[in-house]
Image 1: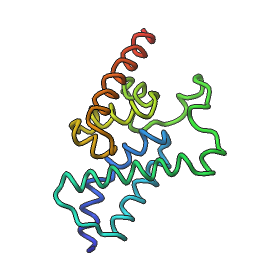
Image 2 (image 1 turned 30 degrees about the horizontal axis):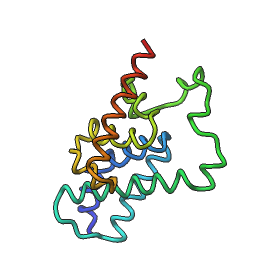
Image 3 (image 1 turned 135 degrees about the horizontal axis):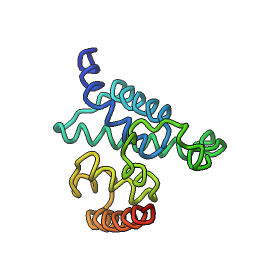
Image 4 (image 1 turned 90 degrees about the vertical axis):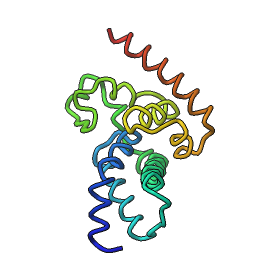
Length: 161
């Protein structure tokens, strides 16, 4: 893979991969590391894509898998995460992709099955069929998770008022 191709992929997908990873790991540094790892794997494995949508889906799926791996790792399970920081101290931590978006902050606090579907649907503009392919779940499961996620989000937002 030549350098200009890699630069093109970087400009095209680095932010997307960072946002997807951040939605899962809730840590900016880890999200950036994951985005870099996705691009590194693209460079090493050089997969053949069937089109731009397949290319983007591969990037997001890889970012999600790397995020899951990080969350299961010994390092992650033996350290304190953002969710363990008292609410009063959380404003001191930077959430780069959630600045000024209270709804996104609430989405990021939902259970994973709802969070992933809602995030991909509303923030990355994927269809139900595409989300089902990315998450490797049936379309009806994605629809159910979207509906339940919306209900949970609505309840959380109403409680804040």
